[in-house]
Image (cartoon, rainbow over all chains, first blue to last red; front, side, top):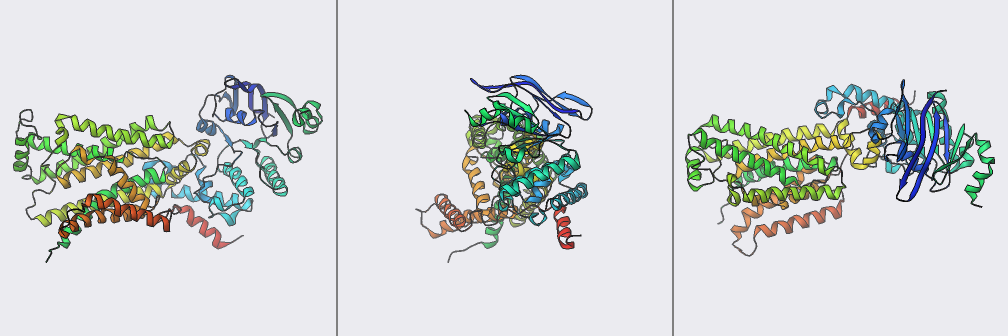
Length: 256
Length: 349
């Protein structure tokens, strides 16, 4: 399998704090990769560097867009998205005054009706709009959420909000999904269901996932490879069973 | 017996309503839908008013062979000449109106577009203050800029329908023009809001970071909206200048901006009909007080003060009953909704 994302020796400092201190990792195409580590180990910072919110102080980030494998560090968040990377947040960032349908319809790129002059003439974009609506309906059906199509986001349960944020990415041509604690605040059964969906998306659509997760008992059942961050450095990596057996990892987590 | 000119009142109210409706509709697009805290609406209104006043007075004098270096329009001789020469040629007056509208839209729109450069990289409160100060800067500049009459401003502006002899007909013709432009503004803003662009604007308003993560060009989109909104504010300024036939810097104080804010808060932020309703109510209060108070013969109650008391009370009462204003924001209407309705009606296949 070819490499989709490569993080090479990335460092990010905030004053004296070394949030990331020379991290390297690779994400293969079609992978479902875990990223774990204690609080403050740099996981979310790494996501922020990959998605263009921070420029790394050192190192580079490469991403495969069709044939090219090119650097994406230094791009703006919207440019990184257009390369094919979509992310979710620890605290979901949905558009709170929009309905479930509208949240999905915001996502696709290249909408004709987003251009001011075209927006004035419905005829020039309504066909595309209907097509996108049909796609949104398909997705909601597949994830058993069609009954919420016209609900405001504020009326959804925490689990549905998390799911909607992930499904929203499916309205875009993104290839790599960065999920930041997708199951935080979600009950155990629902959390497993969510990971079942993620796995299905990987298996059926060939999408790639890099997932930050604290609930290792769930995560380890799904991922094929795990990276462990600690104090901004890569502490360990490997298959789930190998990593959980690693004494260094146990120490970092339990803090003995 | 107090004589009350009902038709005159209606014309005066509706004209003022129309001018303010253009401001409130576009402010609602910028601030209600797109979330740009525009506390500088008056800036673009002022630019439009001064653009048309300057263009019209200078052009009328120059085309009549007056040396504006010798007799500028703000000079007392210039004002007298404008009164004599201004309303003779319908074709000239209408052409100047057209030219003013185009120029005001372009100029105010351009200033709005350029101002987004400094403001879009700061938080919403700073956007508000930057635009507020920009408006004040214009006013102070105008106060000291001799070619536009400095603190006296420009007077005796020839009006587009000044050649119509019958007063009532002239007023009605002008009202027709104002209403036509309100309709145009409404159609444009309504179509923009109920489109994928409108949806993206609301998304940006709700969560700029998330919109950025979905690849939206946040600064460019906001700049475009400020161009459109400011352009129409310029048009409203043109209408004001011709309606009052004079402009001076003190007409463009920050209070004007907040008056428009009061309209959209009262009517419902994010709802265009609410903007019309808010503009109608507040301009009605304004006109009614102006018409009625002098006839009561109570000199103590100046409409200028009473107006704010009434408007303030109205806002408080409405927001207590309905925190989202008289007409709350509604989901945008695009063909996607028909598609969903079809799906839900047909049921699971």
